[in-house]
Amino acid sequence: MTQKKLQSLLNKADEGFKILKEHLDNENIVRIISHNDSDGLSSAGLVARAISENDGQFHVSIISRLHEEFIKKLAREKYKVFFFCDMGSSEIEILSKNLKGDVIVADHHQITGEINDIEGNGNIVHVNPHLFNIDGTQELSASGTAYLIMKNFEIEHLASMALVGAIGDMQCENGFLGVNKIILDEGLKKGEIKVKEDIRILHKDEYLYRALAFTFYPPLTGITGDFDSAKKFLEKIGINPKARYNELDKEEKEKLKESLCKINPDIYGKIYLDPGFGQLKDLRYFSEILDACGKSKEYGLALSICLKNKNEDIEKATKILKKYNEKIIKGLKWLKRENSKKMKNIQYVYTEDKSIKPIIGTLVSIAMSVGILDDSMPTLGLYKINNHVKVSARTNMSVVEKGVNLGKALKRASDSVGGNGGGHNVAAGAMIPYKEMNNFLNIVDEIVGEQKK
Ligand code: C5P
Ligand code: C5P
Ligand code: C5P
Image: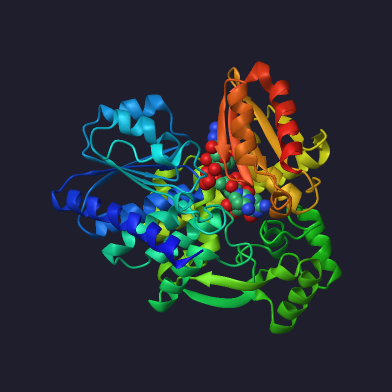
């Protein structure tokens, strides 16, 4: 990333800030629309937090996808300013055609269409790293993009909120890079963020065997997602599976660390903390809490946590996270039994199970990382909704480095069967007509084959 590209991105973000500030000075309510995952919720939380600390007002909606009908509904609402997070880049034209007020888009998805056509009719400030050739998959999340706009308000903890979203979108697997790293440095400089080397286990108040089974990142092959194996592992190294991490003595902690490092050395490494967030001080834990709230449709709770970090909200969300993690464990067992159907260049799993459907993307991603599924080819998770099929596709960076771009593949394949889709190179989604499922799979298989050449 060159200084010039970064400066252009920052200038665009400043434009967004100026417009927003003007609306707040005029006491206009800011209409925030954001995505229902961890990055989307922390984006909305970050924007709402900065507005509320400036004595401004906002009205938030959390949605899974931005449809034209929803935009038309917004157009009837008479707000003077709209703030879209983690979405909007693919809908700039529709937004500018329908919305009369000012529109700020803070997105980080790949942009389709002509660069010249994406500014809208002048009422849109479109902030997206990809516009400036900065990688929005690895180097900046939606909450990071929102941060670049909102940081001008000089509110505390915004850098930490930005990184919570980046972690949620798995942009911290090799430490923070690019603009994320700049945000981290800003948080460190302000003294809000602390970085420590430590064992990377969350849920330190849980029985250890459960905490280990709940360790989805970094993946612990043979332990992640499996209570029984986690128990056996602990027994083998002479540690009581029902001890809690915080109850272990120094020697036991060392023994645990050594044994886990043999499975995955990344289990010991940098952890990012904002002590100001109390029980949610570990930013990865904060991100997991938001992810679980999102998957459980507890959007109000997630936003409230981002705004105030109240203990009673956190306790409620902690219970939701535990249940959600148990669902992931059940889902991984199902995937182990089911396995994937392999094509030439991709593999897929299909489900009609209600408890699996909302987490299929997460499941295939974790399953590839711990060897339940072959990780040398992208995996598509599919399920039926009415007459359509929802697709979640995931792969890893080593497949991306061979040329694969799932966002582009799913966009092209879904367009050609009358559906819609897109996303990032490493993770993408689509919605297609049910009757086109096999056709769609064949097309994706072919495109991924072409991309690898
Ligand atoms: O891919 P998706 O957004 O559904 O993943 C949701 C969350 O699941 C991630 O934010 C991350 O916390 C967790 N996850 C993980 N390891 C993976 C895949 C997902 O920890 N391989
Ligand atoms: O809509 P959005 O961009 O936030 O979704 C990104 C998705 O990509 C998340 O589900 C995230 O967990 C997933 N992801 C992934 N592996 C990566 C980066 C992102 O599975 N390396
Ligand atoms: O829904 P899922 O978590 O699988 O989405 C992965 C990525 O694909 C997200 O970044 C999401 O915004 C994108 N997506 C898309 N079009 C769809 C579905 C998902 O661009 N129809």
